[in-house]
Image (cartoon, one colour):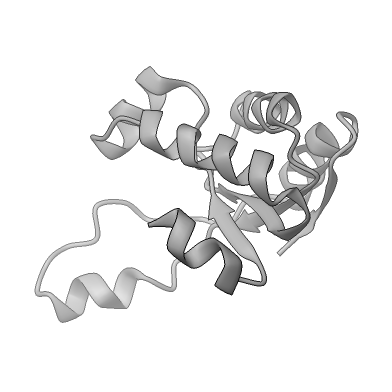
Length: 130
């Protein structure tokens, strides 16, 4: 599929939630192997059209995770990244489905956002809040 769409895409916004496979599986219930392979492929084939995005959710993707994702991105040759602070805007979707939201999402503190950005910048990756 990537072979067909890659020439048609101006910019790939690629979310990477967690670098560690065990932690990713615990949070999402899924293997992140395919995600990381796709990121590696995009970083190799079209690095100037790739932005690796880290959704920053307190208690899930914070702590040592931003540094781990930044190290992975640097190893793959990613050039640009963005920190996407978590928010509670999706809570209404759960209500629309008649289900309880599984967790309250509290936005990360400004210092946590700055620390996540710094984890990328120190590795030579341009990074900003998105």
